[in-house]
Length: 592
Image (cartoon, one colour):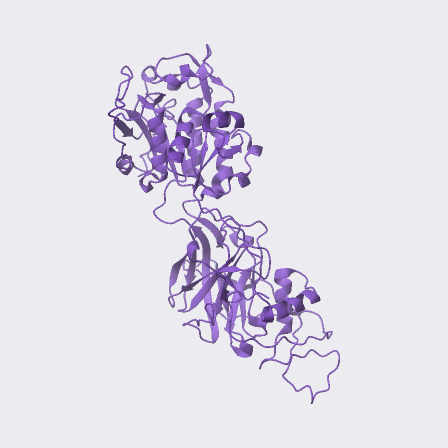
C-alpha cells in the first residue's frame, strides 16, 4: 500500500491473515466538541484484532485471525474499510500483494507524464492585419505561439508551414474543444467581424485595410452577434481553464455546496499495521466567520511502528487542470504543528505523491501558500530524484497528512503523539502576484457611442453612424467586452481608432471613456498587445488609443533613422481600472 510520506522507520513483518466470519456492519459515531458535527460515513467493517502470542503455546482454530507482529491490536476492520473506500470492493489477492509490496517492494515504476512548462500564447484572428503582426512579434521574442484559424491552408500560406495550428471557428462551439487549448497560458484575441466595401474589394482587401478613404461598408460573412458576442462566449469557455482566473480556482470550500465535489476519507497508518486514527468532519459554524469549515482531526500513535494519519480525497472523476496556476493556498486554523499537502497526478493507488510540508501557528487562522514548484516527488516516504516533473494539468487527488517523519528518514520537529485538529475552510489554486493579463482583446473605439444620449452622430466615425445598418456591430463588440470583464480572467481590452497600414512609431494618445477619434497603425496595435501581456499595470484596463498624426497627413518613417521603440508601460501606469465609457450610458461614476 502507498503511505506516501508516512513513516520511514522499520515496519512490522507482514501479518498472517486467516479468514474468520463475523457479524454484520456496526454503526459508529462520536462527538468531541460542543458543535454539531457532520460525519462523512459512519459504517465500519467488523473489528478484527490480533495478539502477539506464541505459536508454540497456542492452539489456533483455522477461523482465527492472528498477526505475529506489533504491540497493540491491529484494527483489521478499519484496514479493510480504508481499502474499500478508496478502491471499491477489495480483492483479497490484491490486498495481500499490496501489503507485501508496501513492506518489501521497490518504488513504483509508473510515473506521471511530463508537463509542458512553456508559456504558450494563443493568437486568434491570426490571418488578419493585427493578428498576423502579433504572431510575428511573439516569434521574434522567442515566445511559443499557437494560432486558431478557420482555414489551415490560408494560415500556413501567410504565417509559414511551421505554424502550430488549431483549426476552429469561434462561431461554432463544437470546434473549440477545451482539450485543444491545453498548455496555453495567454491569449491575444484579434478576431473581428468582417466588414468590406459594398462595391467589392481586391483579393487582399486593400480598400478595407487602408483605413482612410471611405467606402460604403457592409458585413461579409457571419453577423456581428455571431462573431463578437456568441463567438466571444465560445472562446472564453474554451480557454478559461487553461489561462486561469484572477481570484484563483476553488478546489475545496463549503460555500455554494462546493464540498460536494470532493469526497474525503481517512488514510492512516492502519495500512501498515499501525493504530493511529483520523477522520474528516464538517463543522457547521467552525470557520473564522462562523460558517461551515472542514476539519482534519484524529489521534496519532507510534505503536506498531506507525506514526501518521491523513485524509485523502477519492480520485476526481475528471482530473483538475491547474496548469494556469502557480500554487495551492490553504486557509487553516493552525495548532503549531507541521503538516503535509500531497497531490497526485495518477489514478493508480500506489504511486508517487508530490508533496510539500507547511508549518502552522497555534490558534490562528492563516493562509498557507504552497508553490507548485516546491512539491517533491515522494514514494513510500522516499524522495524520488528521477521522477518526472509535476504535471499540474492532471490533478487526480489531494491529501493532508500529519506524520512523525518528513522525507528520507528526517523527523518532523513538531511531532507529538496524541490528539490533533486542523480546521481548514478552503483549498484554492492561485496565480502569483503581480498578476499579468491572460487575455488581451482587440476591440474598437466607439463601442459605447451609438446609444449615448446627446451625442452628435454626424461628427462620429462611420461605424458609429452606421451601427444599426452594420448589424449593431459596435453594440455586440461592447457585449463581447462585457463577457471578458465578467469572466474573472485577468484581461486587457485595447480599443484602437481607425486602423491603417502605416508603420508604427508615431506619437500616441491613450485615453479612457470612449471619446477620441483618429487613426493608428496596425503594427502599433500589435506591439501594444504584446507589451500588455507582460504588464501588471495593464490588468483590468480598457482604453482607446490613436496616433497624434491627423487623418489628412500620411505617416512615414525614414528607414535610415527609424523611431525608437516605445515604453508602453508609461501609458499603462496612467490608466484606471473600471473606466469603460459605459458610465455615460448608465449615468453612474466610473469605478476606480
